[in-house]
Amino acid sequence: MGNLADDIRHETQRGVILMVLIRRNLDWVPFGELKQQLLRGQGYPLTDDELRFQLLYLADPARGYIETMPLRAGRPEELEQLQVRATAKAVDLIDGRIAADQGVAF
Image 1 (cartoon, rainbow, N blue to C red):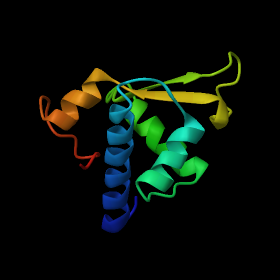
Image 2: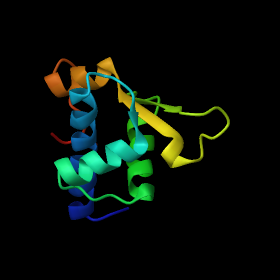
Image 3: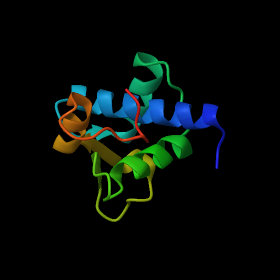
């Protein structure tokens, strides 16, 4: 378990990730491009492991805010070969059409 500051930081990171992906019109975004957008466009430098953790959280079937897909079959463990996109449920979350998620801050 993290402390309150870590929890808030993670919740904010997840919200920023969703906003970036939604601005891409639910299109697929390569992992590396997302990582760069978070750093350069939003000021959120995340390591590969940190970003992977947040993506796994958002992709969890109980949440379903993002989908992931390997660029090449047979290489899902290689982050640079991963694509990500937001789902309609993520749009509904940001727009307030579904109940707020305490694990995601906007």
